[in-house]
Length: 247
Image (cartoon, rainbow, N blue to C red; front, side, top):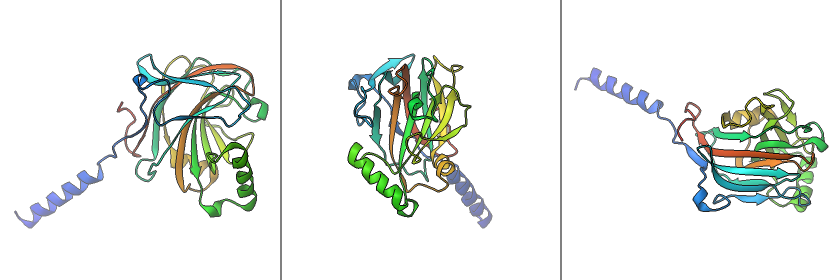
């Protein structure tokens, strides 16, 4: 084979390898046959005084999903993660609500409820935590357990704020809320989301995280006293240039 053909072959192989996509990393592929709760997930109760939200795995309009029912209640359904955000930075999932909450207002503690939210927890580089923040986290972990993260991004289905709104959590600036759906226009059906997790964290906090440590879903109504019914399905991480469609 001539040198020209070798160069052409090497170039073709290089281009082919450059377009190889990362395989999806499934972190929430639910199976109703496994039982009431998905394997590897656990109930966490940030507010131990609240009645816990009820979760179960079920088939729901063609989706194997986690169903959440909140009645003046709050609990997270959570799992730990070990994801390389450099290789697979994009989180894809499907979710639904019967209806948004009526009286929620994420700018106030008494309104800090959501029909549905997806919660990502992160570990931060030590230099990004000042003394006051470290002391506050240490005290909070004494009261609520070691699962409390350094920082969190919450993707929420809101009732009043426009899609794209960022808001610091009413209880702590270490958690930032991003409105992905708002109001009832998409209620009653499954909708798909795609988010670059690292980019969203950078937008929320102004720097990169050290690592992603956990994922949780929630439907919470302990502040407003309302009821909510939501579903979550098909959580997976994919490459930046990969579509979310592989189910």
